[in-house]
Image 1 (cartoon, rainbow, N blue to C red):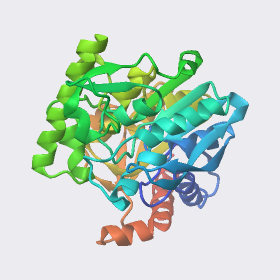
Image 2: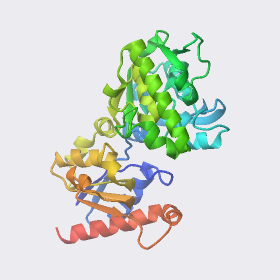
Image 3: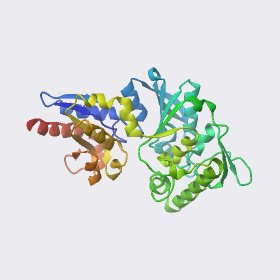
Image 4: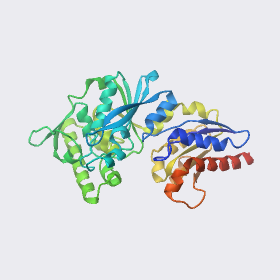
Amino acid sequence: MKYLIAMDSFKGCLDADKVCDAAKKGIMMIPGNEAVCLPLADGGEGTAAAVCSALGGELVKCIVTDPFGDPANGYFGDISSHGLAVIDTASASSLDLAKAGKGTILDASTYGTGLQIREMLDRGFRRITVGLGGSGTNDGGTGALSALGAVFIDKNGHVISRPCARTLGDIATVDISGIDPRLKDTEFSLMFDVDIPLLGERGCSRNYAPQKGADPETVLLLEAGMKNFADAVQRSLGIDASSVEGAGAAGGLGFGLHLAGGSLVNGAVHMLEISGFDSLAENADIVITGEGRTDFQTAHGKLPAAVATAAKRHGLPVICVCGSADPVDALYDVGIDGIFAIPTSPMTLDESMSKADTLITITLRNISGIINSVR
């Protein structure tokens, strides 16, 4: 039996390479099996590493500016053979960096991510991809835009010196005429992992800001500020945020970088295209996919759903293996045939995470053993 292992990372636990390796170890315990690993990402943390793995690049360490303006250790994906640089938003604007900083989500800025994009331009890259997942910010991308040359002006005609979530409500005019001109000659892709709007009940402030430390009062303040920013963009540039798919990704960074010329793309679909999934699927009998947690969000653009949809074009069965599972009908509707969580007995999250590689191996050994026995 030929297995194609196309899995995402288990966030905070194992990167995609290690997840795939653990799965392959279990599959190869059954005589006669073959397995090909394809570590993937959908725009979330680990996208740079996954693209490097797929295309033969390397992760390069660098110093970045964190959400509060302090230096921090960062990285980017250098795939020079394809003229491509890949930036994880998490490199400079992650939730971990935000939590470790000296401010709140109101003060957190994506300025550091903008500086990384500018550095890639300085290094000569004219293909730049930004993975939008894993942010600890909610500034609408105003920080990144500022680093790239945009100017934000308040109602008194004063330039806002440090755009961040706190200053969204002060913006009256948005001027992008000074955006780095090199971006016009750059293939600039923005990978979002969940299609989330900028505003409203499903928007970034109401849905994701609480995970970044915002209390209910702060959420309302963030939503009001983001609405003001969207209105200012509409007045200044004639761009309606509600018409931009994925605008709310990374606390609105997707919308901000779209204003700088970036093209928002479904991260999972984009990853499958550049990784050569279809050619590998032609030689497979079954596809194994997975992620840290599988639930209703998975069906709305996450990697396992995209893998399942692509696999069904080749008529292949799809099994999803995850750290924890909350199956919903929509997951089966997109083509996933079975969902398996890896815990083998009652255990805490910490216990499951500490044993994840072993648990993945055991789960895949059991799954492949059953499949091979009924062939």
